[in-house]
Image (cartoon, rainbow, N blue to C red; front, side, top):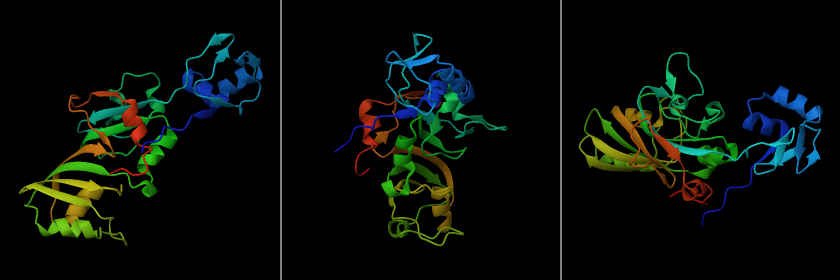
Length: 244
């Protein structure tokens, strides 16, 4: 049974920095100068908790709600999942949104991996996806350099030792769909995990594409580089007790 996303509450200074172009320090000065009000009452403490849908005003003018944002994006190759990078374009460069730098990726992909990327400014929501305790499954389509041995299915189900790691990977589900093609479901997010899992079996992944995170499937209508907001159902599926 899905649960609704918990209400988002921010400190007043962070709320102002989120919904305006003011920095946190500028926001604090405005607050202490008596320029900010909530429901008609002047606020003077930057630490005051404010709900995302609160009626906060600057010099009497309402500020837009600081509702969290949730997007899915079809990531192309050669983009990195970072806020900024000196050598490469980032997935944030694909967005046409206000304050894109305040968004972050919930579950990164390597530069040469394509497919589903989730972006949000809701830290609790992204933690529910990335926390190892949540067992949030990710599904990948992949192509390998060499034929995939049938025994790999049982090996992945048991867990494999990755180079320099002392513990096996968590059980994973491998579905071989062609000689060098498969789908893989994993619940972890170790560094380069899918490629390292196949490397542990003496094979190499040459193409990797993420199709789903939990119950959120990449929208087939999104071309590479395109994105859209999540539906309410997609967003709230992250709070399900299990992601199967």
